Image 1 (spheres, rainbow, N blue to C red):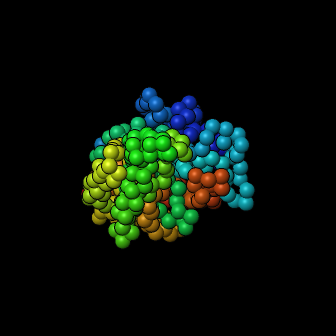
Image 2: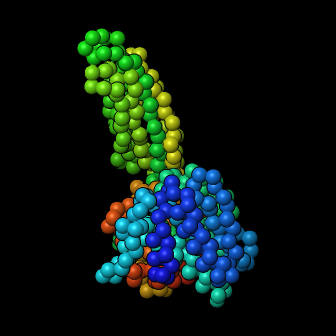
Image 3: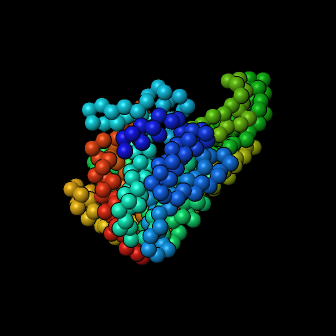
Length: 368
């Protein structure tokens, strides 16, 4: 498992590096095919291609093991920080988010291929653009999950060892403001400041945050202006909306659109566009049943887990939204994702794979 992990960690696969993301997919394709498992490759024109491995089994509704191959790191990062193991922890770009989970899924499918015992067809879905909102993978994720018995998304386990039973949804937006340029000394009054308008909108947007209901608004990036001695003709801000329940999305988008449309500075205007989004992983009785199956499998392996809620987003929200029981973070344990300190606990790799295999073997049809 570590040998396969080393190979894929040492391949740069940032979300916009199609060649690198595809190269990682080809390594997994070769692994699956070497174990007699059929692999389908679905071409994408911008992001990396999508790979879908299939193992036959009873019935038509599969159990899906899911994960993404892209990372947040730039080209050259693998050469700067190649895969290494120190003091029981593996390091390298994407080692736990989430190439470790992809390795885990691959070995689970290979084990069922060799020994049998899977209660349904198994599908391993390897997507290519999760770190940027899965714009080219979402439709395939939803199609694969729709009608499945269950989805296990092998995002990394929490540093505590827990899995994720709930996630927030997220909408990532760009707000563009248009004003009118003027010399700030010679004819100031003729200008219409887009920067001032943007500032008003940021304050109004921030006031929408409601920590009690789990709704947060963050304007994390701003830009604008032409020069210090020019009334700003244009400005923009990027908005991060996080929410817990699907109904909150509709309500919050309506409030955001109203703020964007308000003419805070006379003579300015603004537009809003959605750059990407994730749906929430909401708890249902079927989701709780799936967690119970996994917990029993973990106990049978020798460790216990709890379900955690996180404000982070993942593809598991898409599978949950189509009505398929979903459990997230069934991958190996690790921490510090998206940083040079990212690590994976080596000793967690085999037990987490065993627990997932036991859970898959016990996964019966669940009602969403």
